[in-house]
Image 1 (spheres, rainbow, N blue to C red):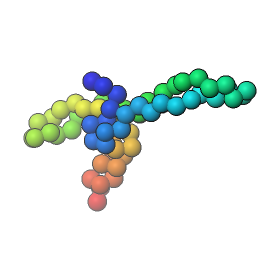
Image 2: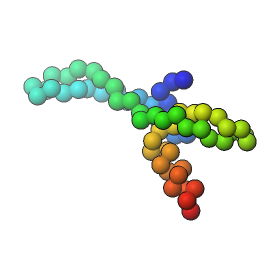
Image 3: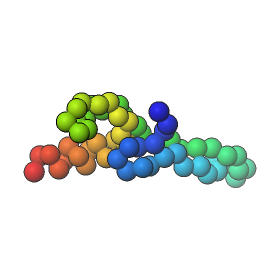
Length: 63
């Protein structure tokens, strides 16, 4: 599986790491992915979901 959320489609973001002297070196920020069991077409399936999407889904279930 790749580093992409199946719900939101969020993936890694790239940019520059800056030192105290402002030298730029490339780096990536990865998504906070969690393995979660969800029902897909009536069957339980393990998917990788971002923590933000998981929090949103749990909040919607409570309503």
